[in-house]
Image (cartoon, rainbow, N blue to C red; front, side):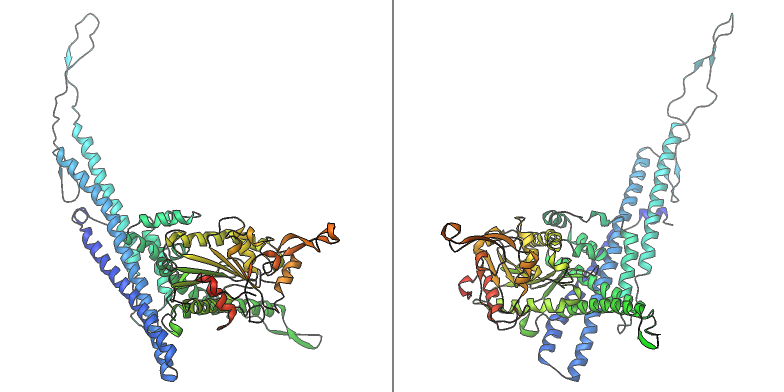
Length: 589
């Protein structure tokens, strides 16, 4: 229970100063983790091998995780102290206002909060005439008692004091419970991220009234998200990142560093959660085999269990691939810092990983993968964009580039029937458009960075669906192995015919399959001069690799449906030329 004297003498500035100190610790730990990841782990992994190097890398990985732990926990302590200071300031102001009013009325407030007031009324009550008796004269009577008007005023002030103390006690108790749990055993060899997850939940319960999740924009345009973010102080931004990392990390339009900081917490929490799912599933393994008609075979229950186990294991592999990329900066081939712009493990899982900061890059490339894309296969898609970054950055004058792996939509998970339907593209189009618009907002406008949208396989169908809406925030479109973009010609896409580029390997049969599935656009073709000259009119499902489609058809020297990003290939170099606007370097088919 907060006493009268404790509340009136509370120095909230001391709490704020302590919060600033923990904020400095948190930010310093964040900076140290980046140094470990980018200046030590990456470079050591690229230059050293052997048992000793592996042991050092293992220790550095632990050090990086410890710094991240300190960053997260320090941020939570800062949030608790800052929230406590700001919330207690409210009842303290109420108490002081009540004391000022009491002083103005000449009342005395005792150290226990009770209120004393003058016992005599300031104005005497008037004498009142009594009713006359029959046949008599009226007489003057005094009231039986004279009410003291100060009593009600004093009671009102006492009530205000009591309400302020009650409010302060509720706040103090709420934060005390959360702060008491912000502790660790100090064993740096077994830092448990579960501590952070629990502490976030506890602190939300304590500080959620002061930093409400409902204040975070939901379903808004990226510009509105950015305006909300810019309206906050840096301290308030830190609090929202600490309390609601998943919500902030998914907010299109705010700066990439803020999303990355939030999503690294989401990544650590996701790895913990999925690992727990796997452990729980392994503990419930059903009977593997049973004997039927004298022969042993796998049970249906075990096969279903194994399929679920494989899906969970695949998600863990994807999460680990993301974590590894985040620590590779400055290592192999001088990769830039990676930014985690989005992550969730719902459904097949989604992830958005950028090589380099897209907010400041002169050229940005966003890659949308196709059928079967999901969190499980994130490593391959991430590596494609690291190769494209190297090739693009290696162009004349070493342009500043950011290449982004965008596994952001529910992609088809089978060739038939899923990849033959347009619904996956139409459903994913608004999500892609919102992300691209968010990039543009964070960059400062459409003219701040040249953006190339790259669609592979069904990803190009998604790009087509997003583009035909007329609001694709991109300057160029590159498609590789496209089964169709839902339109019949390049000039129907939002960027204009001169900025549509296509690649197709000679043995890639996906474009033909797309025609059969009807993912192209119906195009009228005049054959042999038309009916007037003995020819005829034909209607085809045109895809970008068709000459009739009108896209720039680039030279391809790779094989198969997935070779377009092979290192050192003309296929990859052509994409890099488009990404960096060196169109004159593109080799045509």
